Length: 623
Image (cartoon, rainbow, N blue to C red; front, side, top):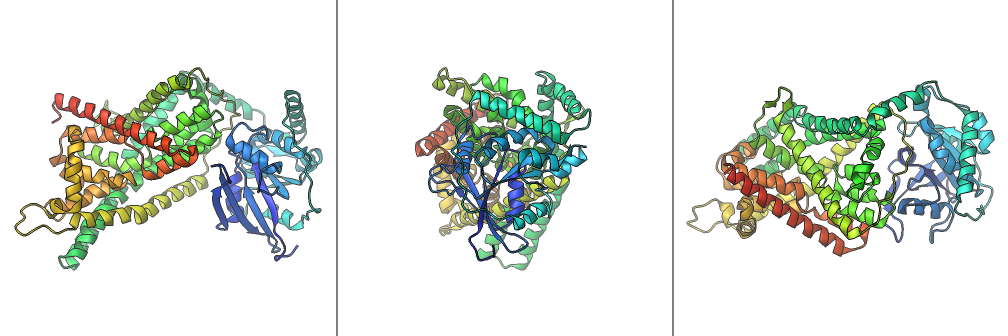
């Protein structure tokens, strides 16, 4: 086949966490596109690769699945594509079955199940380097003989890690059109026979060092213990938020100094006027005020990525399964909810793995209550301004304790909402959580670096994109129209933004919010991080002094009461979601009504919680 011929169509089939998507990214690089399958919201990733000999190959990354006996929307799409039952989707000419070489038994049953259809297949032993490091020996010749299919080794996270697969593709030629055998769901007896066959093949082809399983079992006796495991999880989360403040201090100071120096440099070289105001009061005050929180966001993601790569997160899901069952959820909801700490959008999309629709819908509705990273800049600003930096009990950073309390408040709020929605669900029981635990691994430094690079890139793109655009828009609204002759107040009070802030102040005054805060909440509907930049812009234009943008924390500490600060912190624990999240809810549920319901109940919850916080703080002398 030459480069001009019709490209080979292959699909990557594998269980979750097999490294399938990493292999897809390695094969296709930038030659890929992401969309949804027609008629459903399951993500579709398709790409192109060119083998060393010039052969073009169309690659489809199928959603992760443990079996073709589908239990979720993701698995149903995988089943339909593999079996050729999906309308408008041609069956692939070749299946590359990606399995985790360190845990071959986890994917072998689906390989045997799919093989019965007679589709051309090749088995990719992914993470083969990790298997060798763990002392696991896989006899590829035996495996090829027993399975009756080629076996290649891949390392999806290493450059050149797909070389053997690419070389095999160069030498493989399709034997005309393939007519797959009709697929029928496996019954209990067939499943048991397939499992027995998988165990037999594993016994012949795989040798694991003695004591490997015992180490995992020993660790699991602590990690999965109802008491010690729960305490370990709580301590891990607690230390994570302590580190967010302790480790980030030095890089944040460096960024703050750079932003402040840039503001001074621009002021010294530009004449007073609209351009200087735009650059100094708008862009530097707004964007610079958000950029300073990048170190804290990266520290948070470092912990999340390390826990995920180590194999701990599925165990945390098992540990919390019984607890979450008390509010009508199962452990399956844990991973989507944990993902929502990064951003509610991927968390909501991750609910596709939940089999029962009502349980999935409840998880979607409470996912925004997990404190996403976009709120971290707001929390960090207010905590640094109003909570003294001191040690509690000789060990704990008080600011980190407050941060932990805010995250905990979101979690407790989510569980309370789920408990209320459980009444609506009636006597429907959550789907039992059944999944095989992956082996423990030392987190890959490469994975951590790539993950942090990706998160930093996403954050910086938001800073240079939507946050910059909203900051400039807010500066424009805060600058025009110019104040009338004889005006004595700051110019922003006569601007469009000032008029809007004064109008909204009537709505938010019971919460202790002034007109400056009311203005900042408006662009915050598009992106939470913009709130800090918006406050920087508003105060730069409404207060005196050249260093206002660099001294936003001390400035609000002087002008706001402690009750106002606490009220605003609580507001952001429950605040209505950004427009992108609401659009995702609409796409996942196919209902604008549910998206509107989410925004309404979150607004009501935030308003009530902030009002109570403000009144209690005033009563306790926080005014």
